[in-house]
Image (cartoon, rainbow, N blue to C red; front, side):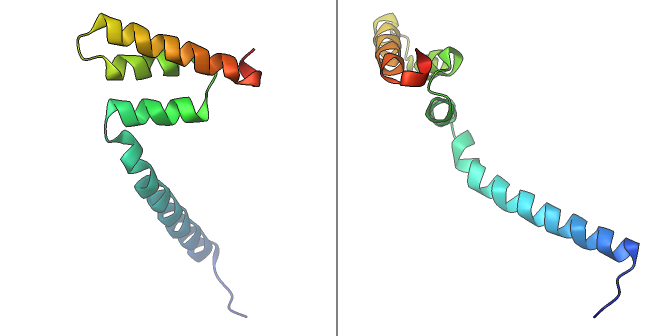
Length: 86
């Protein structure tokens, strides 16, 4: 068995930690592609979050208030279908 000094163990732990965090960062990069992908991910992970739904609707807003209202109504209906949100 190889005996490692405290310094060597610390360096190995730091390298492994940096490698794991780098890989997880690479998997998250597509989420930050645009406002829409970010808020779609947020709504998927927190379906009861009114802030996530509101910001998702804002990301779809193309200057049309009617479209924004339509998306918000859809979001509210979707939230009503999730039992945890009631």
